[in-house]
Length: 212
Image (cartoon, rainbow, N blue to C red; front, side, top):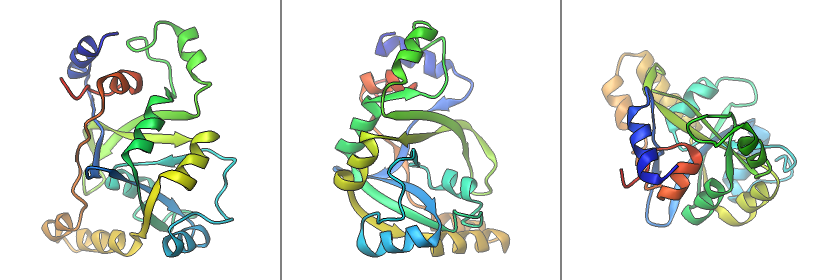
C-alpha cells in the first residue's frame, strides 16, 4: 500500500493511530514501569543494571497517560516506579523500521503469510486505546513498542541518553485528580505532540503518515 493510500485509510479508521510524544530535535521520551530494585538504580546511573532482563521483550511507551493507565498510577505490583527514558530519535526510528505488528491486519499486510514472515523482526508494535487524565478511553490509539533481541541491547547500550524517576510526579498528578483539582493536574503532564513519522515507517506500523 502506497503512503498516500495508507494515509487515506488511516483517516477513515474509527480510531486514529498517531504517534504522539515528548520530543526535541534529537531525542524522544518513552516510559516504562518497574519494581524499585530495577528503577531506582537505573534513574541514579542513567542505565539499566543487572536486574534488567535482556532476554525478555521490554515495552516502551511514548504516552505518559497510557503508562499511568497500565501501571495504575504506579500502584500495581512490579510497576511501582515510573521511569522517563530519553532515547535518540535515530534509535527510535530504527526500532520502528524493523518492527512487525502484533496482529494480522488485512489493510496493511498482503496476506497472513506476509504478516507471519514479518514476525522475524526484533520489534513488535501494538496500538491500544489512548487515555485522558481520568484514564478514560479516547478515540485515538496509543503506540507501544516491544523490543527484543538486538533491539533490547541497542536500546540499553546505545540509544538511552537519560533516565529520570517520574514516580513522585505520577502520584502528585493522581492525588490532584482525586482532590478534584484536574486543571492543576493537567499542568503537570508532559507536553506530547504529533511525532513526524516518515511515510515508509508509518505504513509499516499502521500509523497515519506525516505527510497526510
